Length: 361
Image 1: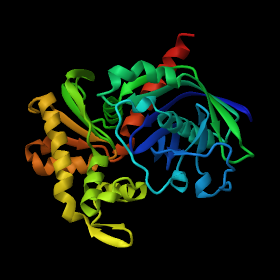
Image 2: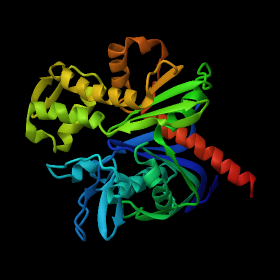
Image 3: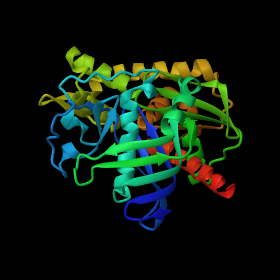
């Protein structure tokens, strides 16, 4: 890594913009004496700021925790403090062309903001290779678009006027189907995992349940696909059952989503605690539709040696499969850090690509 006070170059980084959270890597670090791929996240929602308005949040406060991106003349805020900039009603939609939206670009640049913070906020950072991902149902259509979006120079503006505008330049990029990242990373970190033979990766994200069939690490796209309902759909069903008006309230959906993912007994909304057990049937119905869609495409699961469940909702779907398809239990696997499985796998691919490019210079 090249470094001075204002300019650094890093070989490889990764970003995974999901429908609920945006995950990103900050390279390789050592935690408690163990080498890790450092990964973090922030909510996948942006706020549109009023053009020309004074930014109201002081540096160091929650509302300033993020960055501003100017996209087509409109300022967008992305980061952990985004909730301080949102309106009361904030609908969230799972759109097929998500990666073409201004919000997606703002989230990607939000990830770059946190990479810059991790490096001490240099004015310029060059990433030699950045790997990003797409769901299986949008990969073929938008792979080239996303790669073109990533490569180039990005302005990343800090709300802190002492930091101000910084730039990130991406020299090269690759786009992966999201579940493949989890397969690579799990195989790398679990020596007892036999990647030869048939493996099925089930990536349970916010907006989609992706399922990837692979033989000896090579995807079979005819048996792979994505179902456009996942954790957000589960949260919406619970919200509608409590009160139909709650579906477009970001804070409510966030609270329900966390209650589902963490298997909490209750969720507090408007000062009242609601028993999550009352909504188990509605949640399972969403998961059942995803499971049936997977069976319709992948076929009978008898020939898969391993079924790896990952993603932010991985633990929820893992328990659903254990209960509703007990014959699969012996082959089910789940990474303890499944939220970051994909993006850490992307980092592995970015590392390899950067090393290859360096060797060929």
